[in-house]
Length: 159
Image 1 (cartoon, rainbow, N blue to C red):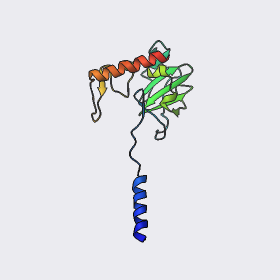
Image 2: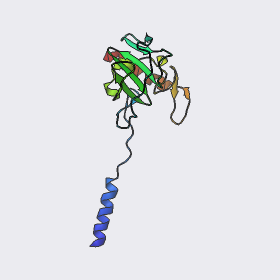
Image 3: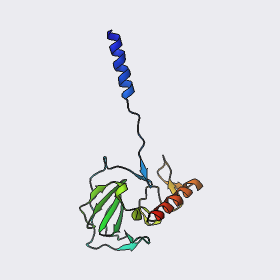
Image 4: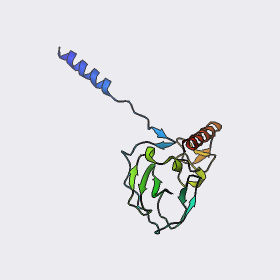
């Protein structure tokens, strides 16, 4: 009788063991904010220099005086920072920033061409993709380029 209970407990414990879940992606960005580091400290002048990135009125901050390890975008009345794999939003460039799930980021920002980014999640400039297990961007395969064109077209359709 005792061995039956022990066997049942072991069987129950083995069946409850969760398999690792792969991270969900949204336009190439990791979904979720549960492990997000604290908001970045952005050191910037009151009104940093920004350039228009696309037709959707998204501006990319290219001011050398802005000190942040990431990409800074202005869209509408908000500033967005992408750093260390997470998104943050604030009403002023200098913050304070609050973490945001990528699904809440305007698609117009996600559709900014990779050439305008400093730290795009898929790697460097267009045509280069960060390959899993490597530290450097490698030439993208034709399949990867096709996926990028499809993703960009999807962003355009949603506008």
